[in-house]
Amino acid sequence: DLGIPTMILHYENYTYNFNGTKDSLLEFLEQEDNHDPPDFIRGKTYRHYFSKEEVQAVFSMLSKVALQETWIHTKHYFD
Image (cartoon, rainbow, N blue to C red; front, side, top):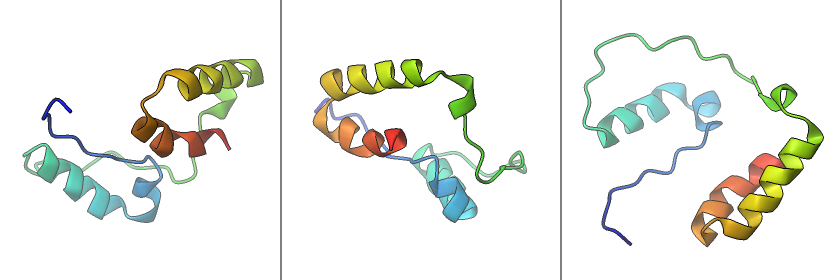
C-alpha cells in the first residue's frame, strides 16, 4: 500500500446512479460541479471494437498479472 487515496469506480455505476456516481467522483477529486456533464448513453458497450481473440488475450493477461483486488473488481467485465 503506497498510501495513495484510491476510489473504485465501476462504469456501470453511471447507469444505476449517474448523479450519485458523478458527485462521489467529484468529491474524491476535490472538485466542484461547475458544468453540466456530457450525456451518458446507458447500455453502451465497446465490445464491437475488439475481436473475441483480443478480449480473450486481455482476459488471460489480466487474470495472471493483476493484483487480486484489481482482478476482483474487473473480472466481471469478461463475463
